[in-house]
Amino acid sequence: MKCKITSGNLKTIANDLNEKLRFNHISNITMINSHDFLFTFSMYRKGKLFVSLNHQSPFVSLVNDIVATGTIVGALNDTLRKMVKDGCIQEIHTINNDRILAIEYSKLDDLYEKRNRTLILELIPHRQNLIILQDGLVIFASHYAGLENSRPLIRGMKYQFLENKKSSTEENIDLEELAKEAEEYFLKSKQERNLEKYKSLITHIKTRIKSLNNKLGILDKAINQAHEDLSYQEVGTTLLAFSQEPEELKKYVEENHLDYDYSLSLGNNAEKYFKKYKKAKRTIEMDQLEIKKTEEEIANLQMILKQIPYLKDEDLAQVYQELFPKKYRPTAKKMPVSTFGVINIENNKIYYGKNAKQNDELTFKKAKKTHYFFHIKDSHGSHVILENDHPNNEMILTAAEVALLMSGQEDGEVQYTQIKNIKKGSFLGQALLTSYQSIVIKNIRESTKKLLING
Image (cartoon, rainbow, N blue to C red; front, side, top):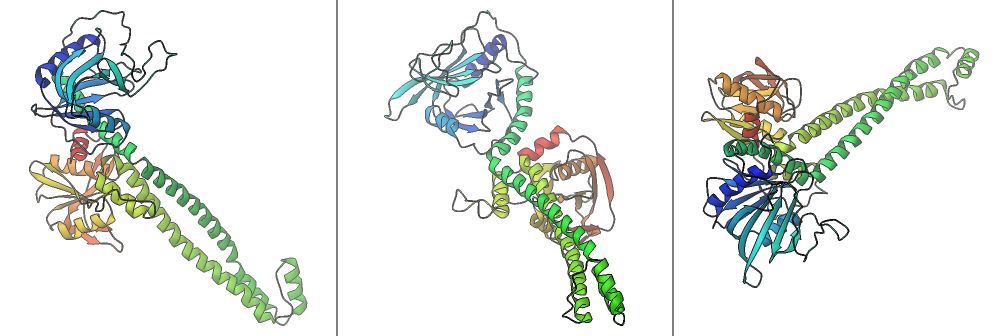
């Protein structure tokens, strides 16, 4: 964060929050990842409170135009929903002239008795913490500290704030600039969310890729051996050439250490080597096809790994179910169905596929002949369709950037053309371009990433 949170400017932030959020109920709390979360309020609808307890630079800020996502399930999420959600904010202030924000609120407990509690946010780099107090006593802390510490933090003990020897006065801070920076950070936070929530999926994919690479090594070794075995054709032919020269035949067999059964005819011995030759030839052909298939699967899995930060829950659930049906256990009776991705630009829609099936349907069924098709050059990737017959440069650039991002790339060459210049290939999702133009992109704009993440 460029706007570093200090004890002075936190006072300015606290005063602004107190003015806007006092007497609001906390209507919802969304855990974005393990250390970032959003507060939504009952009356204040102009923004949400974004709290980050990241290790290096914790901060709080009201943010606008943020599309929330599903919450991360876990202990902190459960605690906040149980102890904080639906609380009515009474006051927001700082503590001890330090980078500690206190949100005083009232809430009904399990016995429907009104309780006054305090949500403490210690926004100190490398010492960040979230603590909930009731009657001044700690009832929860994201990071506890034992009695051996200079400042014990134990459930049931009276809260002791961190010692601060510095005095501070209120400092001016550009709250709008802070909000913009928070919104930029939020995009990265959402990407990190997927990496956390679908860690097991990522592990499974990486394990599968490793297994497939080992398979390639075995296939390559088998092909090399088979190429050596192609020489058996020459051995069989040579054996037959000695049909009238038994002494020369014996000499050839001994010199080349051949497996020759003298109880069988010359023709039968030769046939054994011809069969080995044919087997080697079939092995090469079949293993080369298997290598191609394996390389295709590796490329697809690597693309999925790079797509994960931009995919939604239903997309990732479908990926998990398709790749690992035996390991996947849906949490709901009926999971949402993954559909094409879509973003809007200048009142035009840009669609993108998230797998081969969606790519095929999007390009060859949904798109019109005059719509524009985008795809990363010479690589596996997402089909991107721009619903416009005469796109301007901004539309073309955005669609090309989406094609790169959804193909797991940050730079590269993208081919684009109208659908009428595309033929369907031999396998699902393959598109053959009869004519096209190209655009080379070196740096993808943050605005496009924002559109994609919030799309």
